Amino acid sequence: MQYRHYKGGLYDLVCVATLESDLSEMIVYRAADGSIWTRPKDVFFQLVDVDGSLVPRFAPVA
Image: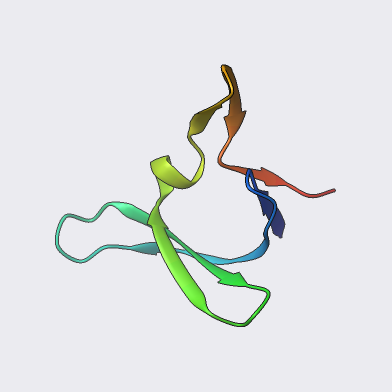
């Protein structure tokens, strides 16, 4: 599934992984340039303040 970062970049969600040290869920995602990134699941899906409005950090692209 593809997501758009609130700053504009497009990313493909690769998978949900488990962090070994504390068993928390991590999102593994790929940028358009092919680089692979991870974030904690709750951070990936959290709302961020942009000019006084709360918007998703990553929003699904239909």
